[in-house]
Image 1 (cartoon, rainbow, N blue to C red):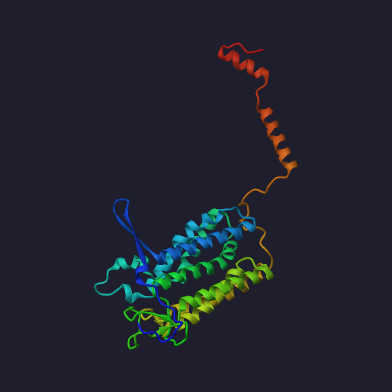
Image 2 (cartoon, helix red, strand yellow; image 1 turned 180 degrees about the horizontal axis):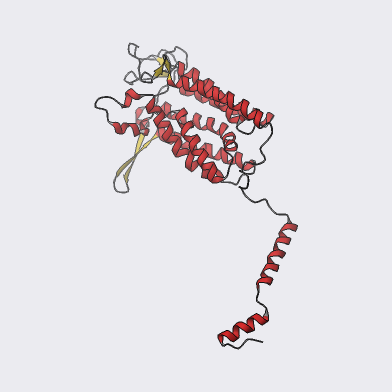
Length: 335
């Protein structure tokens, strides 16, 4: 491939997209997709961050697992089906293999779909864990940006998520055999590395959200609202210059641009509504009547021990009762 910029970013060799482990349980080789590993790494990173943030606010360590067990599977399902529904032509045509709808390992997972599915899962998980949904959402906001930044490296290895042609030094090299390579362009044409732009945008967003949170102590979903605004603004620009020939459009605008506008609008509305309804801090990250019991003082522990001892003594049968029971059984009572 001829390169027209000396500092261009080469795409990884396709051989690094997958590797096999086998035989797997005597059945055959197990194919590991690098794309999936980056998604998994992002999820794990987000879990540690959310757990740390929730425990700092009085949550039990590990409570995030109870929520993630619902949020992650539904988030992955939502991400996949959102992608399929916005790329209908890729999956539903004459002779199509409909099982490809579920081929998540081949790429094609939409962040906005994961937000929808993940929100449903988080709502269910928070109910079971007794955690306020908005407390979890605020703890998740910067963690989501970290997870998305890590996950975008998977797009890089999959040779996807790139933008219009560019002559900038950091242009991304894409092979002309790529199915999304625009027709009529010369081999060696470089493209905007949208995966890198989004990584930078997300990491800047993490720093910004943490600074705002420290300064204004945002709670009740207000930090999550700012996440929606920040991510929606950046994504709307990236999608506007993205090469995605099979994406569905509405009024000539890609579906993901519309979704970005919706995210920004929802974030603004959520921030305004929650600021009016809840101007202060949350009393607890837990729902009323849920959560761990507060630690007892030494005096309270001593009083509780005395109460238990008194209850045990009162529950013991009196000597007269022991004699009566012994007579009924025909056994001499001990004196």
